Length: 332
Image (cartoon, rainbow, N blue to C red):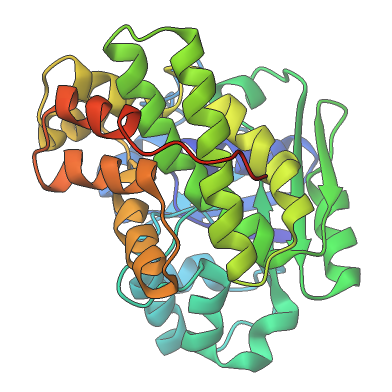
């Protein structure tokens, strides 16, 4: 069975490696001609030192070639480029296979989670082919076969079980979860909170501050997600609290590291360039703030992160603004 990947970044490469090691032939599409050539020549992935492609993996810059004979299509691109890539896929033809979304984001201006973007591009008839793989996971750790647990959500229960079985290995455990919206919102919104935690750590505010940001951040995530029709308990699981914990607690996280670099005095564009990979939280905080205004749901941490990145808010003022908010009862 041929599994096709859209994107050859660290996570796409990692998941393709996982399936290749299980005996599947994988082909990954990338726009980066140099990257495709290097990986096809067996060189290490530039962002995963020490890890070269498995013999069952191949790479192409030809999108049509990547889609040909695909039994499953796995997406691993930025949420900002998500719609554009799938509009290109549509010009080639309507996908007849299952689609696994692994990116975590909310589209700006439309406020759509990525499964809903797919439904808009291809029509509602595509829904039963859509699944989302999400949860606390770092590519560098999965590549080392370190124990990892994630979730897969799908509109179709049979597909959900199929994808869980496909990706499960002795060290990579995949739990089914039927709440597609909850899994998508949890995965997207936690990246914003991770930026705030990175800033806090970079300013040396301590573990207590980080714990407070994570806890109140989860409260923000849950409020918005529930208002959008998600199950509250999903946000307490792997794609919510689990992903939040891992993303907020280590500089392996691009979002956390982005915030840390901002606290070290870098401008957002400089920090992004230093990291080299996509910082999804910087994109999604715009969408989340738009939704919070539409729904009249206060999201002070999200708004503060937005103001720091896009309005140039001084970090000292940001801390003061959050700590100076009126105190209300803790409602969970």
